Length: 367
Image 1 (tube, rainbow, N blue to C red):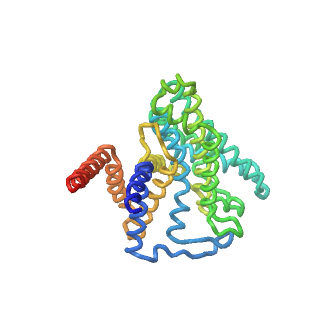
Image 2: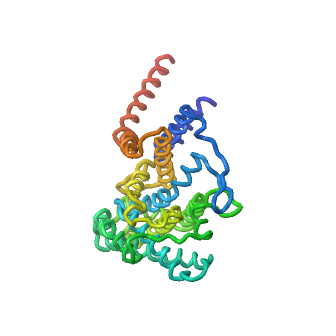
Image 3: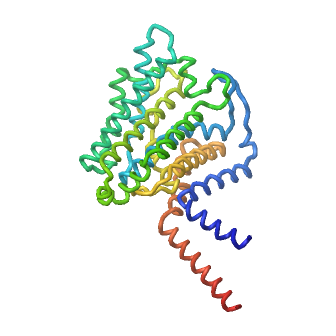
């Protein structure tokens, strides 16, 4: 039984090698915090605007990672199909927040906010962001512009578009019990709503991949677009769908990010969701997904996002100056990316094969 356990574990790790780096990073950080300060894992219930709410470092990591997880999911899909990254996701998220707020102001400037109105504002934000995603997708899929260059357009002017939509220098966030539930809690449920939204979005993508061939098509287009076309796959449509889904993720993430700031009277367009595009790319890479396209696992991107946020929370709890946290993050991320590189993987595989060959020769000699 022990002899069979080793090969089974090696096979399991080989099949899930994309997840290994992110998993090791998360486990290492959890063990480090357990040794450093066991109170890191304390969970309590606190009173919030909408009722009882779970609180604690782990809860905050899972909660605050929501926007990054959602965008990393869409980024992994676009990266797989297009072999490049969308750097306009932060700007599209700000546009989503602006459209959401603008619709609510237009509908309820002189009357109480209602749930149907919130749903209408949410739908409007999603539609607008999907259209912007399709705009990026058209530049990439139809005009064959490299993804990072194509999305540089909205990266540059997207926040200005949000400013134009909002019609003012700052976002004026409407404070309302219904809107506060988006980033707080639903009365009677102590689990932060963003965590529930993450589960819902994960379920939506699971159903998409379960009942469609989008995963296979995206990977096929990313590996070899010409071969995919010969097999009857419409590469242009696949890329457009991937960018549209990323726009959908950005819309939801932008609204959550905005509603977290309820009570803050004015929020600058330039600071909302700042640098999230770089964080999403890192999450995809830490999760073991190739940034050159092809095979991908959304679970890897999700774990990469949680690893990044867990690292951030750990550094914060260690008392690292907030101005220096990025530098510490960079060091750790460099180590993770280097360890997950193909060169290191090949070197490890060579060492492992040599070790097994030595063992086999020793057994043969004894026999």
